[in-house]
Amino acid sequence: MDNFVYNANPGRVIFGSGTISRLAEEADRLGARRTLVLSTPEQAAQVDDIARHLGSRVAGLYPKATMHTPIEVTAEAMQVVEKLQADAVISIGGGSTTGLGKAIAFRTDLPQIVIPTTYAGSEATPILGETENGRKVTKSDPRILPEVIIYDVDLTLTLPVSLSVTSGINAVAHAVEALYAREANPIISMMAEAGIAALARALPLIRNDPQDRSARADALYGAWLCGVCLGSVGMALHHKLCHTLGGMFNLPHAPMHTAVLPHAVAYNSAATPDAMKRISRALGSEDAAGGLYDLASGLGATMSLQSLGMPEDGVEAAAEQAMANPYWNPRPLERDALTSLLAGAYRGEAPA
Ligand code: NAD
Image (cartoon, rainbow, N blue to C red):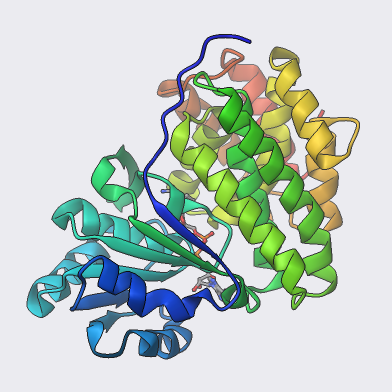
C-alpha cells in the first residue's frame, strides 16, 4: 500500500426515517434557543411544517435561499440574523439552502444543523461557493463545515424524479473525482466506491417508484458518502468544468454535472486505470465513462448542455476559461482535447 494522509472532518450525523423528530433535541445539544430556519421559496411550506418540531426555539424563518449563494441574498439574511439575534442556523433543503447557512456561519461562526433534502452533499463539506457580480468564488474554512447533519429519508420522498436522478449523479461526480484525486487515500476511495454503488443501485428503483423508502435510504446514504469525499480531497477537471460553465452560463447545477461527468471521466480514463476499475465495478459496467453515460441517459437525464441553455459559441470560450486557471488534474489539460470534450457534452453524445 502507498503512503497516505487522511484528514477527517468532524461532524455529527443522524441518519434514518423519522429522524426529524430529533431536531429539538439536537438544537438543545448545541445550546440553541433562537434559531433561524432557512429554505428556498419553493420549500417554504414544507419547512414551516418541519419548524414546528423546534417549538419556541425558532426565532424566525428566512425562505429566500437561491442557487449559487448570491452575496446580496446573504447580506439580507445577515440583517435578519442580527435583528433576531439568532444563535444557530438550521438549513432545510438542497445545496442552495445549505450554501446560505454556510455563508452565514462563515461570517458569524454560528453553529449549523443541516437537514438535506437532495443528494448534493454540501452538508458534509467545509466548502462554500458564493456568487458576486456573476463570478462564483469558492472558499474552504472550518467555520463553514456544519456541526450536525440530520438525514431524514422521509423528507426526500418529495424530490421529483428528474432532480433525484441528476442530484444523484452530481453526488457520484464527487466520488468519481475523489478516486483519482491527488490526495486520494484508501478510506476515501472505499467511501467513494460504496457511494457510487449505492446511488447506481438506488436511482433506477427511485425512478420506478419515487416512494420506495429503502431505495431512498440507499441514495441518501450514498449521497452522504459522496459528500464526505468532496469535503476530504481535492476535485479535478470535472468540477473545474462545471464551475466554469455554471459561472459563465448559469446552467442548472445538478443537470450540468450529469451532462459533463461521462466526458470528464473519458478524458481522464487512460491516466487513471485504477480509479476506472473501481468506478466500473461500482456501476456494474464494463467501462466507467460509458457506464455513467448509460446510467444517466437510461434514467431520462438530459445529456446535452445545449438543451440546458449553453450557447454554441460557449464551447470555445469555456475551454479557454478552464485552461486559464486550471485545477490539478491527473491528465494535463490540453486545449483541443478540452474543446472536443465540451463539444461532445454540448451535443449530448456518448463519450468518445
Ligand atoms: P437546490 O438546493 O437548488 O434545489 C433545487 C430545487 O429543488 C429547489 O427549488 C429546492 O427547493 C427543491 N427541493 C430540494 N429538495 C426537495 C425535496 N425533497 N422535495 C421537493 N423539492 C425539493 O439544488 P441542489 O442541486 O441540491 O444544490 C445546488 C447548489 O448546491 C449549487 O449552488 C451548488 O453549487 C451547491 N453545492 C455546493 C456544494 C459544496 O460543498 N459547497 C456541494 C454540492 C452542491
